[in-house]
Length: 594
Image (cartoon, rainbow, N blue to C red; front, top):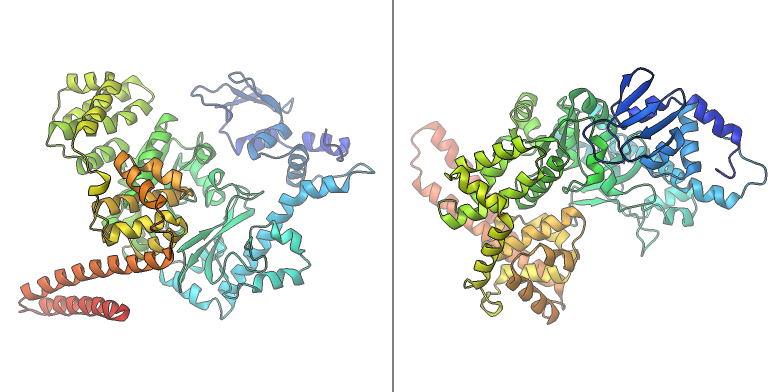
């Protein structure tokens, strides 16, 4: 029982709420007679066994045997308590919620905390939006996003905002609106250690909405100064990152109509797709897609399009997402953007048509994976081909039909010039083949701990692993392409992957390292305490050394191009001036630090 909610209210909610409409927001339903059918949202199935009977206001799954009324359905899907589900449905149906006399006020307070915090976030998002669009303080942020091609219509639609630079402004503002310090401490809007200091300051703000358009959380992008490029709300009473998709509230209707969805990497990517009329785009709020996020679109979308970055972490996220989606029987394609640019840049520099063409020309995941393996392994050697095949086999395992598996194995053999029989034989014995390869690697000559050269690049990475909070700074200053030391580059990619997954802990970093010798090297050097003193300075110095080496390489390359150029036409002179300007820019950066 709801306890403090009157039975008349509960009965009214049940009788006035259309269960087909409610369930239909989560599951595509087809009418057969007086009953509606669809695939069950509570367990994985291909043939619909989930029924909704509006006459009885009930649902039941003949597969997993879960059933109930509209209230229990909303409780299960939205992870609400019984009273919370009643209040939510009452608001939807326009039913007044009446309470029993003598109800427990503390119980009411506890049950309404989530709703009150959601109301707070909606109010703060509205205020941030005003500061962005109507005040001088937010003008620089507004100029930034309009120069990146966003229209005022898009800015209004996504309710983009600006958080003031004064980190105490928000607390003072909300106190004047009669919000208590105890309540604000639960909101996630303020520092835990310094409760008067706002978590977000001097940032472009992206409100994160639930499927009904309620603001649950926020993300903030740094536009000037130093600090992490992005800050995002952590898990809160009203918000769990792994269960929410950015822009799903705007995309859900288009996903249903188009039967497809784009998973892209960040806020700006997602917004760019929407502004270009591709309104079935969402972002997983961290590159790694989760099962709960996939469940939000599964059933409405037959095809998943992936639009993650082309760097190491983005590629790793693409692989994981492909396997997850395929294991759920979904068709998967990968969008390759022109020149490796992000969607916002393509929209700005090349136009809507180019971005639309990139989406329409997305390649099937099979081809994407084979192309990736061709670049990752020396497939001109038997050992390289074997490693590539072993890396491809989990994809085959994830496929749902024998025809799909057979076709993919055939394509694998054709790509690497292998006989169908050999490919099929190794696939059927993949565990043994993998075990033999691992044994071979263990027996091969490997780099020992003492043989690993701790140069400036590797020392900077080890300092970051010692204090993982420093990685937020490193990733804003460097990319994987700035590293020359291959081991340092690999560890940077691992750190970036862990960062995007939201877990940059020491144990998680180690679990991503496949080489046991590297694991031992990391453990030994970190445990020695060598990097525990003045860590931030070591990281800052390391970042500059890496940047300087990268800049010097770029300058040398430019000098070679300048020397090779013998300008004889106007176009040549224009190119020369461009190269000289690029060199001058690099010289300025080098001299500025020195």
